[in-house]
Length: 354
Image (tube, rainbow, N blue to C red; front, side, top):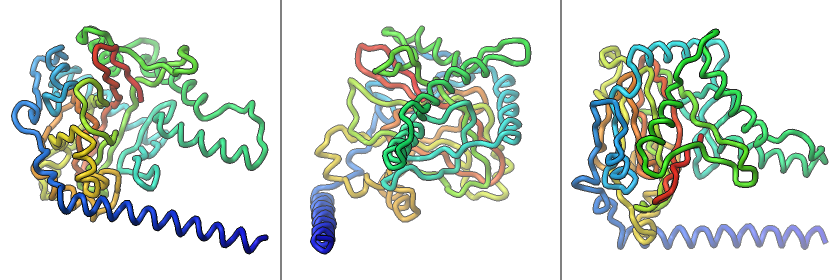
């Protein structure tokens, strides 16, 4: 019986490998004969980075971004520069006292380490979900009590602590930049904006964003990735919002980094708008979830010249998280930003989470 089970298991593994190899070969054939990633690079207004110099989020700018008639939106001076810099320094000191949690990135191999650390009372939601799955698997094997607090419960409890702690400074209160973002998105977008809620228990709100810290020297000159694999759709999409508090000094990096864009943000105006185009270029596009040097080189060659954004303290950058982007690595300094995600559905309330 044991021998029979072993043979059956080996046959299944071989069958799975054979099937996966066949699928890979099919996609290689499609791309070599019909793929043309460069033809999918947007031009005209869809390739633009909208720049607002007045510090205000405008409804028409949001509409263009959400409908993919722009690649990114850069709102300069969204938050007071002096206040942003001071807050950035406070977060750097907090990271030195408490340490930061590594910001995991989703790859084909699962969650992997990056050059970015996070601060806060809760992890990103995708990390909590991964921990939940591990916890369920462990409890099934060990027979642990089902009444124990789960990683998802801990996430939602931490969200509330994060909200309350960030608004306080000593005995006084301040306008936390991510609260300002939520308020102004709600005011600007005609259908409103607010925190996403858990489907099974709408009383529980998702996080509104977390501090992210990136210290030089970074391992990567810029990890090109997307946060959501899928074709662009003018009626829905995933977008990220980053408020910059501290950025690496460009002059300091000139002596140790040959890239003049060290510390900047790259985003490529790639406009894959159908599943057929995805399939035709699947081999190259799969590199967007592969954190290895060879795949990154292939992507850089295929994607061409990116849009370059040089954010300053207090700037807000909104971008489509389905377009390839990366934070350019640097040798010296620290980048501190606050990040959240926006879920867009046509004629629906914007949902904010982290």
